[in-house]
Length: 308
Picture 1 (cartoon, helix red, strand yellow):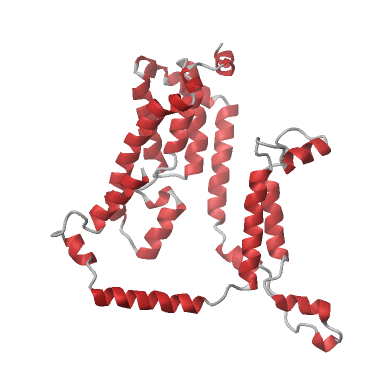
Picture 2 (cartoon, rainbow, N blue to C red):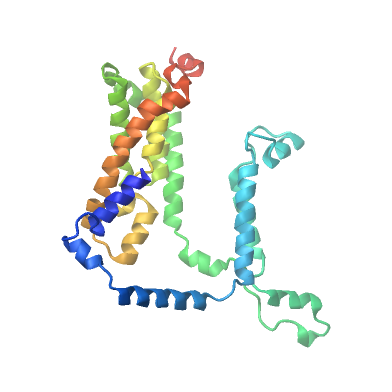
């Protein structure tokens, strides 16, 4: 999939395999231009200087967080989250990633960003103490000014919407209304799910789309006696394919804002990757997924119990 995306972009915008196209002429670089670009990169590299204590602290905190996220409940061995739940007699999944995220955020607000802070421990006289406060690794004022609170509410709203649809029975109602799809072949249903989810995810957050559509397609699968996990895989993968519209994902919006790319050009550039991902995802989910997970061809007991 990534290879097709790469080929599409270099053919469309770099003029590969089209030597006489306008794109090829615009992107051709002379040897002098290549040398100038190399000098500019080398100059910027030297400006970076050596890695600072501040950067070391960020690496340590983020690296430690990634390791601890994985080791919380890895299912391959007893994680620290599993141990804490047993130790304090708490239910399974009582400790979630949010606890670790809050801890790391607190440490970033607490940890110093400079070795200048440690003068507090070696100063013998009052005049030797630091005269100015030492900034923490994460500065609250700067974070508060730049943190996209609206995006946080968008993600939280997606979780709330998904939970509300499940508890109110909306998922079941939608699943019942889609029972007419039972007459279609399974391949066609999976293709429809992929196309619909990809279309919607270009206009909404990936997490929101996944939270809304996965329960619906799982309910649909139970109504037509298919394995719900099969349809959930199709919807889950497809929710990440937002290549055309800037509002589909923060990455698209950042790129558009930084390079002032018109939405029309983004749609044109994303059309090829979108089409290729539809075809590849459909083929992978319909043909390859049952090879890896043969249980997808069987209606599980838990789904059968809920339908009866």
